[in-house]
Image 1 (cartoon, rainbow, N blue to C red):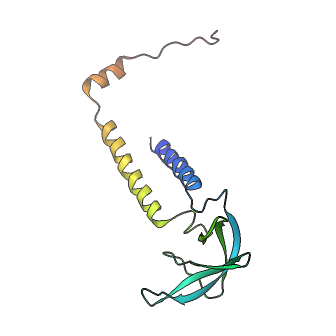
Image 2: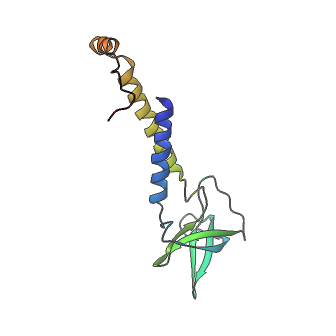
Image 3: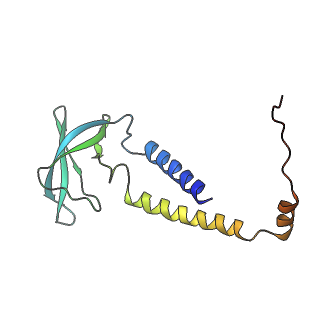
Length: 145
């Protein structure tokens, strides 16, 4: 039961990740950007910004993310939609494909649903046990028409 549940979880989570990224992986364009640390206007502390250009326009997006360290002048790949380059993001496994909030939520959901499945199958009723013990597998013909 555990192998089936784990495989099902991984397939569903991978499918979810593939089709819910913003900007969209299939429609987005990938280009390079340079990291520059700039002071945030709200908190007045330096944050990493990815600076890139599309045509003659220069864009600057927030590149900071939990557990990701980007040094000054590092060249990174970014993904953006050509209709709205302001909503670009750094193209990396951690932060684009796998986000911390989605990972935590999916693991918690996996554990809860696994516990529900275990509780439901742990103590079958007496009638169910008797039925399972009395049932005999149907004889199958070797070559069925």
